[in-house]
Every structure is written in C-alpha cells, then in structure tokens.
Length: 294
Image (cartoon, rainbow, N blue to C red; front, side, top):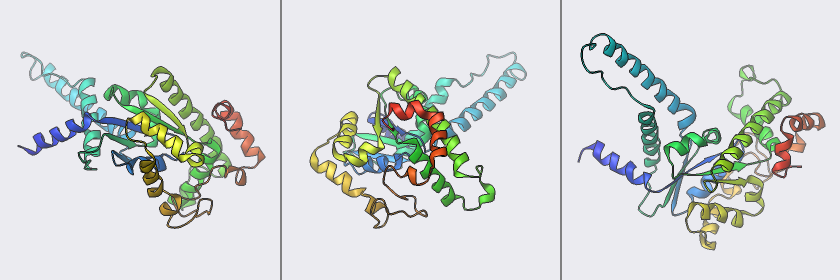
C-alpha cells in the first residue's frame, strides 16, 4: 500500500466519525471548551487549524491561478484539441476537506474515538461553508459576555504584542468599541446559522460552563452523541481545572502574562468605566440582552 492510499484511507475513516467545529468570538472560552472535550475518552478536539479563515483562501487562489493557466493553454496551444478540464468549486471543497482531515489525523485518534473536532474562533463566521463541506457536521457556538471578551482580548494583545508602537488601537476604549461591533456580528451570524439549521448548532454560554459545568457539559456531550456519565464529566473537569491550566493559580487570581489570565466571569467592570460600558451597549446592546448580559 502506498503512502497516499494509507493516508487517504485514514482520513476517509475520520470523515465517517462525528465531525464537529467550535467557534466563537475571540477570548470567549473556546480554548477551554476544546480542552474539556479533548479530555473525553471518545473525543479528539484540536485547535487551531486556521483552515477556513486562512488556508482555504490560499487554496482557492491557487486553483484560480491554475485554472487561468489551463484556460490560456486551451485557447492557444490546444485550441484545436478538446479542452483540458478546469477545477471546480466541488474540487476546492474536496481539497479543503482533505486538508482539514489531514490536520485532524495528526492527533492520531484511536479506535475508540467517536467524535473528532476542531476549534478556531473564526469558525463562527464560516459555519455555512463548513456545513457545505461536511453536511453531517455539528457546530458549537460558545458565547461569553462581550465586555469580558473585550477586556480579555485587550490584555491578550498586550501579552503577545508588547511593542505598543505596533498596536492598531491606542487605548482600551478604542479596542472595546471595535470589539463590540465585531462581537455583535459574530453573534448575529451564528444565531442566523442556528435558526437556519435546527439541530446542527448548539449555543453554549461560557458563564454557564463556569457556574454549572456538569449539566452544561453534559448537554454538549449529548449533542455530540458520546457518553456523559458522572465519571466522564469528572474526568473532563479535573483535567481542565483552571488551577491546573494556570500552573496553580485559583480562578480570579490574575496573571496578565498568562494565556489563562483570570478565569472568572464578570471581570469587566474593573476595567470598563461607565462611558466605555455605554459605548459597548450602544454597539451591541440587543445581543447583550438576548443572551442575558444585563
């Protein structure tokens, strides 16, 4: 058996499992949810492939350039012969699916794995594309209070880009104003997708995961069709406890230099004054209300 045949069989087997995708606004807790699910014995969930928001665009551009070359050859060199076939959108979908499954295959899921997923926050804006490529896929939209996301995103920017001269935003205020608009777009797109495809998309609030982990996570596991008994839930909880992920800090003990900075919902009032909070509400107020963020 050639390497191609072996690999094609491997990713074909993955496609027969329950494929799922996690998406949500930046800093909404998608990484924690990914780790929770990856700790399940019947789930492999990795991130981030940056597939649909990055590599898919490059693949599309490559096929367009190749088609342009082939079309030129058809019109000139081979004008008197049957034209060479061009690549189609279905071919592009196949290449995206193969690239994504190849990424997932690197996790080496064992025989007992029933569901395999990928987490990239930007998935939330590409659920429709992913559904067209994987018609049996399931989608999990994680929602967190956008004001907490904005604060967390601001500190995240400071951590990964310490050179302030390279920052696009001069202040937390300008960042939060931008974030409010983007957060509202994310929620609008995901909500429209969920309404258009009943049963394919589950919306989960980050705050519910924190406050009531067991029943909230059980709902996610039931949605994916895997075991959700008490022992499994405890294993997922223990493997991803904030103190374990943060190197020993309890939730609420802040470390701005860590990816796991705080871990406690409702931190935004310490950072957004009344003016900034009002600015956020003007941009995204209906979505704050809809998801219970008063």
